[in-house]
Length: 178
Image (cartoon, rainbow, N blue to C red; front, top):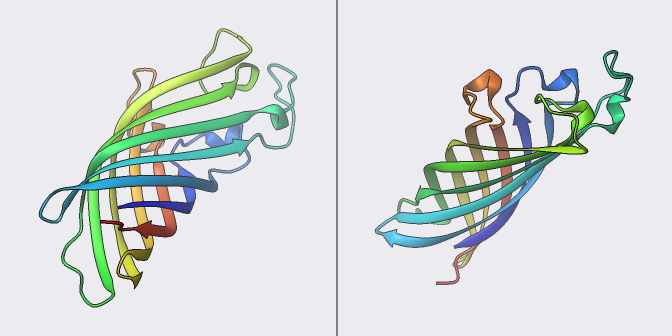
């Protein structure tokens, strides 16, 4: 199987809106999977989330918040379970591990920096997903998916208030060529 999606993503970082416009934003992604055995598929996923700074001036640096840029990308590997198809509808659920890469402007970084031109953070975590497929053709399905992910960067914990993961509500198209 392979597919692509568009999603609404809400990052979990509690103080994210102190610097950025909103915790919610658009997210785009894709995935590919191969049957491991039975209803279990080994799955590889990619996604991203971008957010710009809010209005105003940072009192400590004098920089405009509007120049802040958050660029987050993630790669995930895991298993997805697709129980047998019931007419045109089927459900799925999955889990796995995640790797995160975040880029920001150093002058207005959410993370502590040494004032370089830009900063990059790498992190890891996990994800859980559940969704439904509606097969419009035996080899093509529209889907809706809910995913929750947690990730920590810089050796910090990835629990809810400090996580670069979050809630992702996605819809898209999956193809089943085999």
